[in-house]
Structure formats: C-alpha cells, structure tokens
Length: 251
Image (tube, rainbow, N blue to C red; front, top):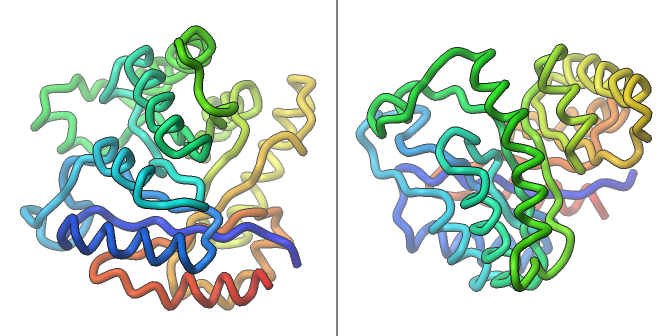
C-alpha cells in the first residue's frame, strides 16, 4: 500500500507548550501532515476548558517544523474575510517555505458564531458564502506580493452531495471526510461523478480521511474505498502512538 500519514492535534485542554512539543515530535517522526482545527471553544469534554486560536498556532507551527505540510482541518470560511484569509495563508506558507495547506469548510459550530458575533445563518447560506469565497481566495493568492512560496493547495472538508462535493470538484486540490469506510466509499463515488460532470480529472484531487485512533485496523478498507491520506485525530495529552502506527503501516 502507498498512502500519506498525518495527525490532527486538538487545540483544547492542553497547554501551548504541549501542543508545540507534539507538533515538533510529529514532524521529527516523519508525518506528512500536521493539522489543528479552527474553532474558538472545545468541541467535547469540558466546554470551558482551555482552547487556542488556529491561525496564530499555525504561524508558530510553520517555524517550529521542517518537513510536514500543515494547516487547519478545516478553516471556517465565516470567521475571516476571504481576502484576509488568503493573505494569512500566503504569509504562513512563506514562513513554512511552501508547506501550507489551506483547508476550508462552510462552518457548523454554533457557539463559535454566537459568542464571537458572527451571523450563524443556515447551512445553505453558509455554503453559499463558501462558494462565493473560493474564487476570491484564489484571486487574492494570485495577486499578493510576494506570492506564496509554492502553489497553496486548497482542501475542502465536508461530504454534502449536492453542494460541497460539487465545490470540491470545481475548486479543490484535496478533499477531507470521515468514515466508516463504506460511507467514505459512497461519498468518494459521488465526488467522482461530480468530476465527470464538470470535466475534471478525479485524479487531480487528493482524498484524505480523518480517523479515530481506534480505526487503525480499518486502513485496508479505507484504501479500498479510495483514501490516499490518513489523518489521525488526537487530543491532549497528545499520545502519538497512533501516528507512529500509521507511519509504520505506510512503510
């Protein structure tokens, strides 16, 4: 088998120093990618536990690491003007010497919106906002001086069959979703059909899957379902044993 291996470090509960230690260790171990998430409050456990903002962490990660690609899995489109987000992404890409991945999605965690003063809207309105933002992101990335170190890949997260997967086929270099394997296979097939309808080669879009540590025995099934890049999700205190197992399976 041939696949890429990454980790998503949950930026909640632990300390900034623990996060930095974890992403440095993941980079030294040979991870292909290191992600965090883009929220303002914990997604599970104590709702008032420690939590940290994504893009300031990513700037630190860019200079703390040397090899792995990095990004948010995924950025919430609603939280930043697309022109500003492109500039932030470009700057982090320069700091990392071309290793930044611009992961993005339409957003879903209502507490983030209400406590930070964003309009939550509806799922369809947030998808419309994402669709409007994607070409603006691309245009601004192409206009910035200096430009990014390389081509900043766009990764879209989500599995909505009518809109999100169409946007992946139109705009993305990579797509992220979740299991179980049969669900991933079904969504992957829908994405392939969108690519066919829009005249895009499906091979141009990397297929990534976010998995729990207890899903390591399903790697073969995920590969058969079309997964090319595994991202294991790990919370504090950041035991990287599941990442080590994935790296060993990668060979």
